[in-house]
Every structure is written in C-alpha cells, then in structure tokens.
Image (cartoon, rainbow, N blue to C red):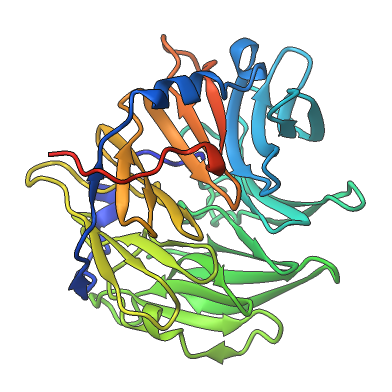
Length: 367
C-alpha cells in the first residue's frame, strides 16, 4: 500500500484524452452505518498497536497479509497472521531507516521493489520470494546513468501473475526505459519492450501491459506482450480503447482506473467490456487518487480527503473515513490503515484486517 498518496500535477503530465464510455446508472455513495466503527475496532491487528506495520498486499487467504515491519529486533518484509500477529520474516532491510517495499502476490510468489531512498523511487532492487521453498531471489535492479545517478523509473510496483513478474525501469534520458518479464520458476529475465514505457502490469493470460506514448506529444496508449514468449500482442479491447490513462489497476479481468486527468473514476467489468462512470468528485482541486485496488466485485479508491470501498454488484461505494491513510483489498479481506499521530519516518498507525463477509451491505444511498 506504499505510494497511495493522491495524484499530484507531476503524475498528470502524461494526461491526454479521458476515458470514454457510458455513465453507469445507479452508482452512488452509500450511507456509512454506525456499526462500521465497531467492525473496524474488532478488526485491529494487535501487532500494529506496538510496532510500525505498513501493509503491502493481502495474501488472499482471509487470514494474512504482507507488510513492511519496523521494530528494534527486525525491520523488513514479512507475512503477518492478522488474527495472531504471528510474523514470518521474509527479508531484512539492509537499511532500516531508508528502505521501503511495495509489491504484488499471486498465491505462490511475492514480488516487490525494495526502495533505498525516502526521497524517490529511482534507487530500487526487485526481489521475489517463493512461499513453497522460502527462498528470496534478486530479479532486477535500477540502472545508473554515466554520472552515477539512477535513471528515473515509474511509480508503479512490480506485478506478478501465474509465476511471471513484470516491472518497468528507466534506462536513459527523456523517459527511455524497458519492460521486463521474469519467469520466476526458470529464473529467466526477458526485456519485452524498449521505448518510453510507464509501469507494467498483468492481465489474464498472463499478458504484460503498459502505457506508452509512441510518438512525441501523443497521449499514451496501452501496449501488450505475451509473458511466455515476449512477443508483442494486441491489447485486450477494454485496454486498447484507453488514451492517457496511467493509474489503472486490475485483478487480471476487471479494470478500475482514474481518467487521464484524474477527474473521474471508471470501471470495466471485463477485458472486452465498455467502461462505465463510477465516481466524479466535485469541481476544483478534488482529484481521484492513484490508490485504486480491485479484486472481483470489490474495489477501493480515494478522493482527498475521503477513502472509499465499493461493491460493483450493489453499485455503491462507502466512505471509510478521513483518518484512513491506505486501503487494499484481495479475494477475502479489506485492509484499512489509519494515520498515526505525530511525525515519524515509520509511524505506528493502526491496521485493520476486515473479512469481506463482515462488510456492511451497501444499500441505501446518502443524500
């Protein structure tokens, strides 16, 4: 859940034409029930009361999640049992002060970028953890320019699906970069694109997809490659139509994303479907954030200072509360992170792990 800050002007430089589609009838903000606070209070991960826990991604088992943990005894990437607070150590950070992590999980492999600076995302190392063997493997790293500085890379965390990992990274001036697809079982790294790509991700196939402006000044469009062969393939229809969109997130099938200028939120139910408008903030400085996450019928998004959880089946979204600093969702649980008081590098904010079956039914619309 690192990098969930609302988008700023710097993230909108690539904005071109907005997503197009029909506005979805029936979407609205549901009332937040009074029972929701009780649900959150019953769902606090006890470890987060005494240590700095920064969730990365849910494990999809309804019980655990991956996180950055900062304690005097150990700081690094871990797996946490939300009910018992039992910790499985995965990799210790070399520098507990500066190192951070963000990544993805496919049911066997955890893949993450380890960022070595609090200032930017340029200095990173990519790792993979095999939950079957417990082995951690370095699969990539940032490159330096002739002056010894790291080439800038995109903000997006690496993605993993079906035993393949993908990420993009800077390799030259003017946004030059590469898209990598790594076969985790065979230990083979393949560069599937050299150009000016933004962060890559997977859809079912697995197919690697990324946004790129193929000519100077043109709005970005979605390009794709087969993860197994590295060959270029047509983008799925729902992605091929998009221009200028960079904050998209997917569970491999459904898509949720802010428009090119981050002024509305859209959802597409499948890789061949048409987008429908879900949310549009009030005019002014209220943007949809790049903190979208989706799994199946549930997804989360933000619009400063509000954070929402949505149910596509009910076509409703609910305000989680202004104290929320991050949200994530997987097939069985919602993870909510609250701001910690004070200013510290690694704050101790409460983390709530809420089974999806405990979420209130989103029925009545607020007026």
